[in-house]
Every structure is written in C-alpha cells, then in structure tokens.
Image (cartoon, rainbow, N blue to C red; front, side):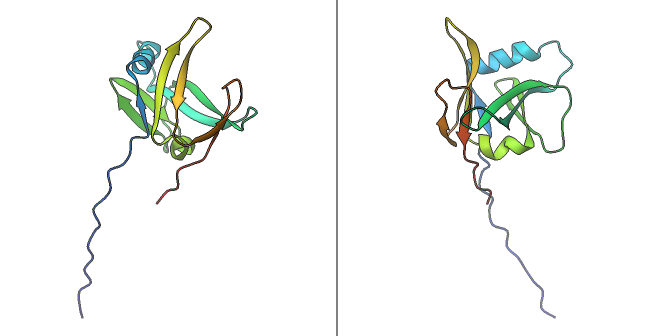
Length: 127
C-alpha cells in the first residue's frame, strides 16, 4: 500500500487585527492601570444611522473567541465577532476642544454617518 504524503503550504503572515498609535496605547494603559482587568475590550454592534458602532469597555474576563492584541505595552481585547470587521485597523486617541475619544482608521469601513458616531463596515473574507 502506497504512503500518502502531504506537503503543507507555507502560511502567510497573519495581519495585525489592530494597531495602536502612541496616544491610543497611552490612553489604554491609563484606563486599565491598577484595575483588575485583562485590557480594553473593543467590538462592534448594530446601531446608528450608518448601521454599526464601535464599542469599548473594560474586559474583566476573556471569552473563548476573543483575540488579545498587545501593542506598545497596551492590551486590547477584540471581541470574536468583530475580528473580520477590524482587521488592519489603527486605533488612535484624539483630544480636541470639544471631545477626547478613540478614533478608528479602518480600511474595511465603507461609509459613516454625518456625525461620525456610526459606520458601515464590510468584513474581510476569511480564506
């Protein structure tokens, strides 16, 4: 009987789900310092006039599908259902005269509402 041999294809490097700017990393570290949390949880939910909104919260525990991203000393937990929507995104933290907020630069975003609070995001196709 002949032996079956398979050759594994070399794996492509996995793209970073998200990266953080220095300002975003500093803010995440500030928000999570001295708290019993795993990191800042980032996700998406349906809502707003454009269809989806980014969500933030402190992650007290990890879920099985969560992806943990550590960048510049800051830990961000990406909700499993948001991974394909956020691949390749950069998270920044901006302070203006009117507000201080996290800002996404998401290559998968196809539209946004006028106020910028909600977005339309097309997920990356898994291959």
